[in-house]
Amino acid sequence: MLKTIISILTSLSVGFGFLFLLLAQAVAASGFTYSSVEAWSDAPYVEVNNNQPEFEAEEYTFSSFETYSELDDLGRCGEAYACVGTDLMPTEPRGSISSVIPTGWVNVKYDIVSGGYLYNRCHLIGFQLTGENANRRNLITGTRYLNVEGMLPFEDAVADYVKNTGNHVLYRVTPIFEGDELVARGVLMEALSMEDGGAGVCFCVFCYNVQPGITIHYDTGTSTLTVTTPAGRVYTVVVPALYIVNTNTKKFHLPDCPSAVSMSEKNRAEMTATVSELAAKGYAPCSRCHPESQESAVDYLYGDIDADGHITPVDARLALRRSVDLEAFSELQMILANVDDDETVTSADARAILRASVGLEVF
Ligand SMILES: [Zn+2]
Image (tube, rainbow, N blue to C red; front, side, top):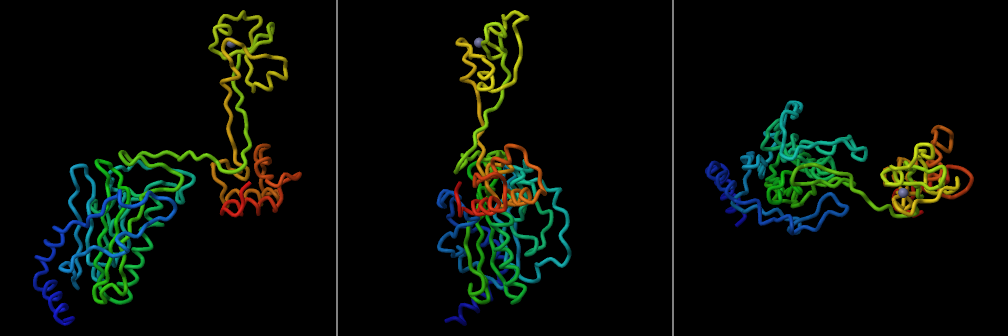
């Protein structure tokens, strides 16, 4: 029985290799839809179909090939499909791919992204597998997180297996777009090692095209920092604003208040201050423009010394450097770093901040 199957497979791949390719391209990647996976929470990928790739038996082959879909009407990539063998792997170093502008390529630098830029030109089938450089049918707009945390470990697994065994891996990467969106929501990655029937490599995963801390507008590729409500203890700083004060009536106004506009020059003065600072000087808010109701404040998270909205090991390092006088802190930073509320910033604060950065402590 097994012999028969293998001989059928061999005849398919050798004798009808060309027909096989046509067949393979006609088969849709699978019935996968983006709505069938849970929304991203913390893992870079999720297993699909119990981690079983959805290749048809007639697609199995022991011969290397690679195919890349034509771009669609919006210029978007479709599935990239290969049987990866050592003969497809690159023998020369990777060339430049910066000439390719994939759909949704609105790249922005963010401090919270390793390497700086939000997007990478993401190979559907990695360069290390088929040696494709600036192939626009193989490059999508993908986040650093998708590229490095999501796809790379799976590509490495396939590359290592093929190199170590000389075997073939049937491999398909499908970018998943919603409607007319220009940035893919993620990629479906399927792989099955051929000569050992999946004993060496077998997976079916969806990798999310997301970047922690950043909201991506998939329709255009633009992005914004995700505003998160800080969890934990906050230190509120009232923002000073410009007011018009009447030195005679001892009232203060918003600059566009009619009473401020019509005020006589000899009584008029401008002050940039907080409401409580003005009150300390004997000024009361105008009952017409209610300047006190417009006052704004910013909440800073204790431990978040660089004020990026998150407590990270970077904050702990800053606190440690401050504790040995290697770093100068502002008054605000001194308050935020002194999480144990003693006199100063010490290595104990740094340690507590490090613990908080990994969720072991909440201030
Ligand atoms: Zn007023």
